[in-house]
Image (cartoon, rainbow, N blue to C red):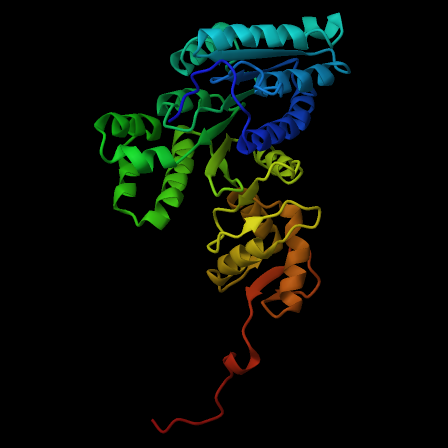
Length: 375
């Protein structure tokens, strides 16, 4: 893992896309929860200085600005807990938060509590969340680390104990695949992050399979920690560098809103997504009318494993829980697949209750024999 030595550094395309995704998720997340709760919380374990070398805002400032806008119309409260391991960057973060407070009204500023803390993500973050009473309330935790195995499994477990907590974790697989096999210290760090040694099977995998194996292992790590629903974004920049964002929640609505955020991000960062379920690993261009060829392949494979068929409602649930696509993209795709004789639908009209079956060409369908047997 490469930890920045400077107070400020350049914002790379991955980071720009992550920030856009964060903003698009927090914009609906905060109003939805504040319609039911008087107070919600947001936390970061690797907050950084709050600004990049060219003046772009960091994630804490992006979150603050979203929350300030939300509270203009709602008499509610939001707490922000920000942890940074470098004292110089934590000091700069406080400065940037002070500047951000110059925009909202005094009333809004009173209702956004922001605390910054110098310390390692673990145990400082958990200690502060407990001290400020954030655990148990609706809480979004951004663990945007420097890509290596920086986040202990025990921290994920503690966060997941609280049903209203959601996390988004940055995971870069290249560090472990490059260094951990030869270095016991790095292997131990991997064991701590994954909560066991099963991830070390990566050392015996073909090079082309290593990243995907670690990705799936880390998604499983979040589920074992207690986040029943996970969503993995495989982000690929123009140079082919891979970074995973793994979202964990216990609520299907959170999953839906995160997907909506993903499919509405600004496309000018040189970043593309890939769906981990797509065996052909086709990159996704996030357009208003997206290329759904990967989802078509995923659904066809899923239906083929169910000879008795699956309802459209079941396929929508599968799409929500197991792919990066949205359930709303399923119905039209089923119609297209039926018209192309890829599947059959019963009845022909496609509704939530429609049964989708693997297509069987007429000449392959089993027909009763008119021959009599001799014995």
